[in-house]
Image (cartoon, rainbow, N blue to C red; front, side):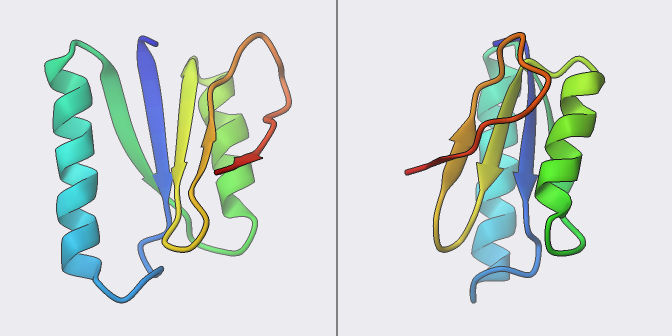
Length: 87
């Protein structure tokens, strides 16, 4: 894991201030570990999948999708199509 795209919905959940802190903490932890990490905000239904595909095309090797109700993670390999895993 060298480059991580953390995808999240800025409108989800009821605690936006806590979510913002959690996103910033996650990015700081990844960056402190020497990982190039960026947060990407969704802006419409289905945009997380589009962002994941774009991130993969831009060289991100790991995609983390954060959701308020059903966390999903995806660690990419050589696949060109993301596979979504529900936790």
